[in-house]
Amino acid sequence: MRVLLADKLSDSVISRLQESGCEVKMQPELKGESLTAALGEFDPQILVVRSTKVLEADFDAASSLELVVRAGAGYDNIDVSKASGSGVFVANCPGKNSAAVAELAIGLILALDRSIPDNVMDARNGAWNKAKYGKSDGIKGKTLGIVGIGNIGKEVIRRAHGLEMSVVAWSRSLTSAVAAELGVTKMDSPNAVAAASDIVSLHVASNSDTKGLAGASFFEAMREGSFLINTTRGAVVDEGAMCRAIESKGIRVGLDVFSNEPAVKTGEFDHPLASNAGVYLTHHIGASTAQAQEAIAQEAARIIQCYTASGDVPNCVNLSVHSPATHQLTVRHLDKVGVLSRVLNEVSVANWNIQEMENVVFDEARAACAYIRFDGAADEEVVGRIRVLEDVLAVSLIAL
Image (tube, rainbow, N blue to C red):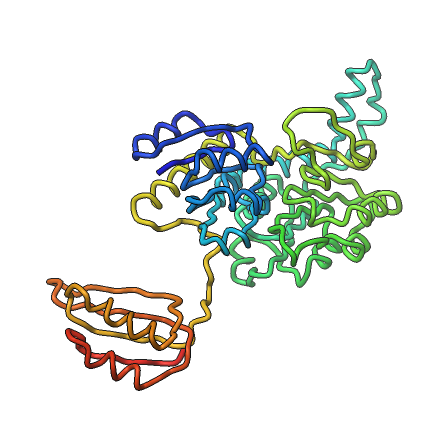
């Protein structure tokens, strides 16, 4: 298989893929029109990206593309809808950067509490102000609120307990049993977390449901002088409401992600939040540790190797959970050449649109059973025609 790496991965990963028989080309500078052109020229079956956007034009250019692997957890830089419509699998590498992101979240909390960046900048600029910087509260015994209990949220909880913090949490999937297991207090909503916390850390996925989750009512619920940490995606926070809360309530914020982030890795930077004294900005580096990047790269290689060996896609994000199938046709048959082709011919004549299909073979390979889930109107006459086909043993049809 031809594999195009549009972001830099370690030499060990490249060797691993080459040893599996893949033809690998690494071009980490690709983005925009250059990516589209490279896809058309190299015509890979597999594309691996980190932050590079994969848009509609890219799928149109890559006629042989079968799989896009996002070397990271989020995949909002990929046009998943276009991928699905083009029959292209999209997979991600969840959980491999969890510790790194959690470490940064804790680092931002400590930085806000002790004003570490301002300390350093004043010292470098020749200003000594121990009177100002010697008044931090400390975080021991403070309440940390976690919004989103995925892999990263759980890692933050573990570290918070190590710092002797109390933790309250909300997640759509959080049950009382899981909350007890994690040692957190379950809250009913993100706003309830905001109201109960000295520090809130956001760890939800970025999608249409979470866009602006930290909005006006969320910031109204936050305590005076409390902290907000966001290491997920900028779209989760309403930055206008956040800035108003900074001004009116003395809220302080640590952000690794924000609106209109630069698309390049180096260059000049100008953003309104950078000059806001209530905000500490980092350069979207949550997953950027050597440990995390190597773990993610190895997971991307595992996904590719599994796909090339078996056709299975670990961590696939764009397979339908519930297909439009309305019926299941079950056909027990002799394990002989041509049986299923005759069955499928009758299915086609009946205008049944197959959504899912599996054929399992019994011991000794003398008989098999095909499960065909389709979208279409039940027709016993069709079932009857299939039942009398050569080498068909039995047929049943059920509504789903």
